[in-house]
Image 1 (cartoon, one colour):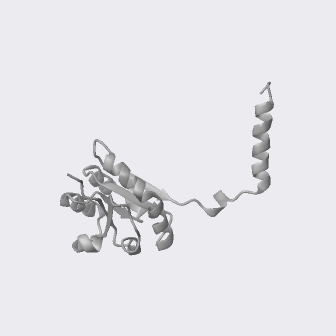
Image 2 (spheres, rainbow, N blue to C red):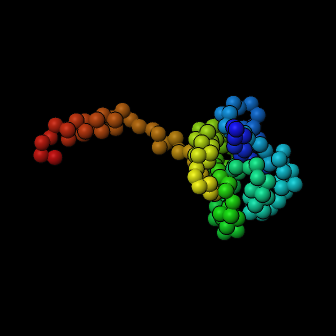
Image 3 (cartoon, rainbow, N blue to C red):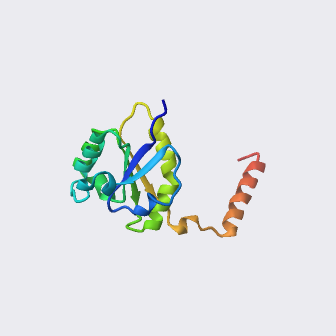
Length: 158
């Protein structure tokens, strides 16, 4: 018997565009909170949302861009009482392009890890994008590194 796809639910303030128009792997299904549990959209306490989603039995993860919930004891206690995977996009604010990019990059692997995790337990993934400056190099920085490695490889006294 084949297991149904993992279901991850997007928080109501998460860019909804990721549900439609993107080709997710067959083992993964995304749903909006407003589609699966519209009564929870106006719920101010994330811990209640986590517990109610877990109680459904068909939800495997919750995706949000509300990183503040990671600092709230009630939310962390509630999450620890579930088997949900919590995915938080960090530092993207309400920028739908950046948040969607992070999910497209990491969610398939997160879903695989959730699927094969044994024993099943709650887990948090904090996704963040580096600032562009962290990727920037000048050619001489690469040359300096390359020359330094060559020098150490040829040095018998190092």
